[in-house]
Length: 453
Image (cartoon, rainbow, N blue to C red):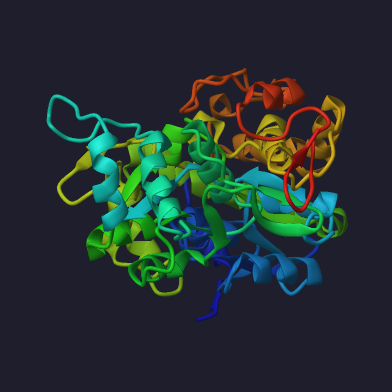
């Protein structure tokens, strides 16, 4: 269903204790796209709480069939902007898959994904998984526990198929990272073979997020990597077990961004600022007072126009807990983060990590110098727009100045908060690539058969 916002009456605005000052936007009627995942929440909240309205924007929020359709419609101008995979603006800008200059002034969230396996695979993994004092599986669970299961499939001549949502998705890169950290080769891409299955121990393929549970239940795939609520849906349906979250793979990893064409931003700078202001307010509302608003957010997201899953399923992860298997519900307060830890700031180092994974698995076919990674990140990520929007909100008394990284150079400190303990520093991407045990290094390339060099 199409949902169109209306601008608040002047009397309502004047009654508010603090209100946004409307910019003289170039375009006030906008259509924004999203995929039915809980991390589209900033869009839903900006609509439902009137933050778009406060900025003088008439907004239509429109669900899309899949990530490719969503990107194509942003490029064509059918959508003015959209909830995007963090890798989509980067891939499009460097011409992987499709070529278009897409930019982002706003990072939508941190964390929010998990890897789920079928009940049969889980039963086969459990003997290799240590247990804690409470008798429950000790987390994080390494993919090393999956390795003998895959070897058993291979000995029987059966492929081990796994689902992920898109070739340039964080889900793909997180799944590959987890597998490789456990000694499993997830396969490579080459210019002539974009299956990503060259030399693979497992076979990763694309499945749209809402279809993941049904595809797992049908046996077409044995495991998948996806955002919520589709991991918790597997638990509720009794068809699978989430074995690891992306928070456990990489603590506070970036997930989705809000993407627009560079042309739109150039032609509509004030509209872009207004959109960014509304989304910052929505993200702040989602994390305010230790997630005090999450129960209301769950009810909003459960509506058919947004995620359309049962509120109980969405609440499992959105309200600070996560259920791994029936009865094994654990506190995970940072499973979904929308504002704290500077979640909404578009860090160059986050973009560079995604580019390193594209290079690691052959989507970037040849070696690139460190400065190429930084320059590409700066083409796409636009913290200057973000900070301009944040400054306007601070001046309007709508957000706290202390909540924004005003002095950041766009790079987070180096971190070893990964499941394998490897240190990542966005300033030295090639050194990072060389430190990873599985993946392309230096000048290596991929042929249709194997890695060369």
